[in-house]
Image (cartoon, rainbow, N blue to C red; front, side):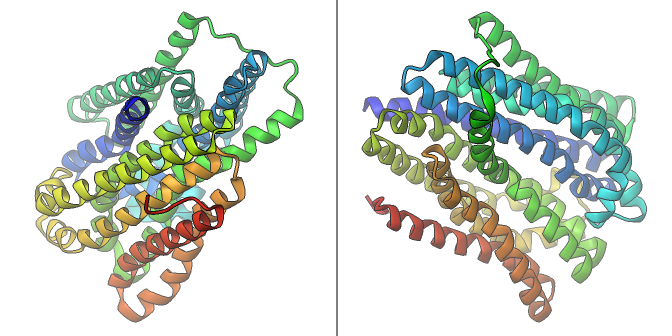
Amino acid sequence: MKLHKEFFRYVIPSMLAFALSGLYGIVDGFFLGNELGDQALAAINVAYPLTAFLQAVGTGVGMGGAVQYTINKAQGKTKDQQICLGMTFLMLLITGAVLTPVFYFFNTSLLEGLGASGDLLVLGSEYMDWIAFGCLFQILGTGMVPFMRNLGNASVSMVAMMAGAVTNIVFDYLFIWVFHRGMMGAAIASVMGQVTAFFVCLVYLLYKKEKMRLKGGGAGLLKKILMIACSPFGLSFAPNIILILVNLNAVRHGGDFAVTCYAPISYITYTVMLLLQGVSDGCQPLISLFYGKGDRKGARQIYHMSRNFSLLVGMTAFFFLLIKAEAVTRLFGTSPAVTEYVVEILPVFLSGLLFAGVSRVVISYFYATEENLKAYVLIFGESVLLCILLWILPARMGILGTWVSVMVSQFLIMVLSQAFLIGKRVEIFT
């Protein structure tokens, strides 16, 4: 009973934190779709992967440092904990400083690479011009949240994301609906949300008087953090890789109408995916803690609880969204034609989420126990499989093949994840 209580103490706040982080893009889509219509909704959908990339970088670096922090904590290495915190914070600052000019000067080219053209390119560029100014806070805001969980206070990460989400909503309302600043207003609102989330984390660190050290870190620790960081980065950005690939394929096989229809689908499924990622990331501190102590049995127990709870969350979301598909789609201000088509194809995407929830728990188990190679294969293998399927199925099935490819790739990765567990002798059905 005590272990179950500890499990939910980490996982529930993590789920809420990730769900709130997903509000950044969804809220932008809600306000813009209702203010400017289908074109703005499609534009924000095409541009959002660039913002998500920044947030994934922050999540990856932050989680990489947090995992090492927890392992050192389990082993009683207080000085090494402080070095992990200091080096992670420095890495977040450096990556933010480097990516700011890249996103400001090259965002138009990046958007063109994502398939934007015409009005979608104009609207997307306006959005990204302002996102670029907030690169540093996008990375700091998402990067410090994992540390709050691993410092032993998962509720602080939830509060940070909740404060950021509320700030984003308030500024979206003011800048889009009151001052009618369109894409610029949505971008400013997103940045201000991350500023708020980072500020909450910073206040907590100062309140707890957490010390940061840099001396003694060296290349060895940097390598360990970055090796782990690739997994949570990929896990966080994976839905957006899918978004990019599907958008490009949808343009080719279904035109702007298909892209517009995929926009609300991506928002809906992304929200569920974030809840599932909240389960997988929420279990990570406990798995790393047991692993650091050498308690493999305890780590496996947490894995089993996480997998079962992820399936429960996925099934609940599946049936709820099947029943409420039309009402949820209309929240984004979609036209009747778009709404009708979304309701028709949404079950295909929801089916894939059940498979994705299982595989993501396995991925977290692997990178929390420093099995980085297997985590890499599962994370990035999904994109490779999707590319192959998008090359084959749409040519035979038309635009339906594009939608089906997403679900099939998620199923195949789930099968592969279970095969990896058999190789580690982790009981799958206990």
